[in-house]
Image (cartoon, rainbow, N blue to C red; front, side, top):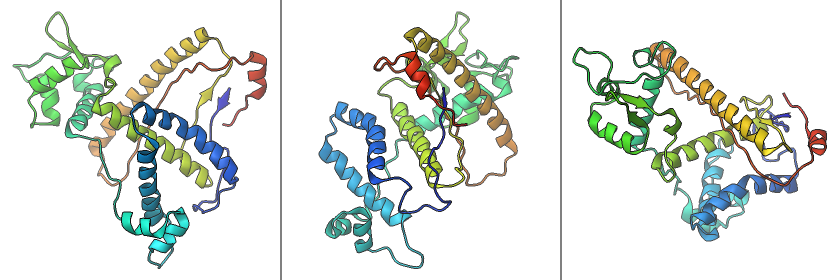
Length: 297
């Protein structure tokens, strides 16, 4: 068992030289980038296109995050930091990579679901999302009022039709609308899934990088790993992890939803994420796996 945490710590201020060799960093990047390269190849995104993005990203990060105090960032300095020719730096500088995949519909869906999962008006006595009538003549909670709490720009019927098509909700035998918790994650190929892939992966990588580059590490980041186990045990742990992870997220969403009502607002951002994964790999004898485990709490 491993409680995964940052194993390499840096000074509190980011430095150009990390406390491990370039060869070690290369090995780290190979392991981290391999799934992304797989995604790129599966999507027909070749090395030429990938390297063009990396070139622009190197320039942007060097320009914005590696400035010197009281000195203007020049093409020559960016070229020195990145290894990219100064002519290319001059040509590409300022072409920020600012593409956003968050659309209005994605944002509205998330906000409506968050309300349904957290607001006591739309939850039962056990804090589960209640089944809702489409409309209510006496002003009680309904799907129409739920949507109306979030937006007046889209008709509730349009959202209902979209959610029925995506299996986010079902209509029961009484004609009431029930939230399908197992289908909250959008279907493959959906724009929302692409958005959350980008945002969640970026946030996790950002937390991990900041933990490596600062002492003490500023973010909580832990994981539990077991290797060399049977597929049956892996499946059992996967089911438990999904159930407990969803319970944690629902609880935190409810706490945040209640607390934000009295919050004065500001520029802070908070996120908690959970992932559960089972992977089939080369067989590792249990004894060997046990001898390699360590605890980092």
